[in-house]
Length: 362
Image (cartoon, rainbow, N blue to C red; front, side):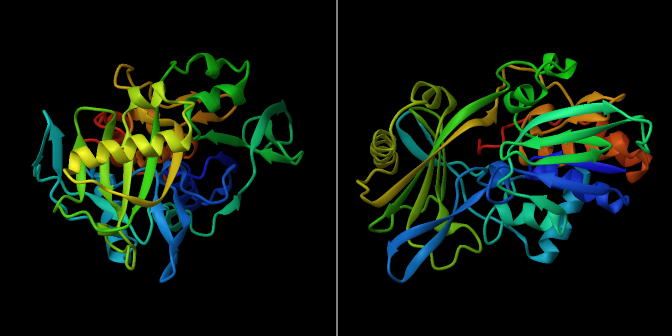
């Protein structure tokens, strides 16, 4: 069996790893320059001569582990050193007050950057980066070894990738809908499953004089503030804060300029932290499809068994990094059921951990 996976985020990596363990040939495609998806990290140029570049986590800020299969995987990553626990006491900004709110939750980050975990899971999987797949076509063929047909993928650059027995789409639902065009599965994708998020990075002249390293913001335009330099494995970083705007504000300011967003973020953060902050430089990143929309029920994975086409992602299970990983396991199990034990498969298929979103929440 030969499987194409579109999207090199956590779901794509999880599915690819599980399928390869079962002896399946896997090829992963992604339009970005590197793997990670919404766990991506950027190498940012600094104005500090002592540290010309620094890593920055623009997307998922951390993850939690609850499902037994994910906890088991986490133990392996901890042993490898690719993941570390982020021990910080969370604060909450609400009713004009910034107060500690230790919830006892264990939170984890990949080191030295968030996308390193995805790279580790992918291993030496065949990977086509900077490759935007724009068309999928299925043709009946008596030569296909699996189910009487094969898939051909076409890229924006004009390249063609034929000969796949199955395709797993792990991109955001809107992008899945565009790729599938008139395929019946496109009609099954609920609307507005993922909400936008503006992320703003502030590199500060001086350290913030406050013990908070992570702040859940319950009022105002922001939703999250994190001292990036406080994360494990981020050695040598200058004072760097990553701020997320909440979904409603991000939607209102969807077309705002980076200058406008950075100024608003700096103003709001100064009010929250109780001191004026001044930035050396700021960077903005717009996630059109970031956090799960709690108003929508999770649809689960969508599958065309006849054509061996699967739509999978955290959005299928309700958001969160953990569910992105579990969605990948589900996708692999639907193609190769023997890749998982019956007990494990049942646990994943019936799990409904539909809490929180992949973008940090309290």
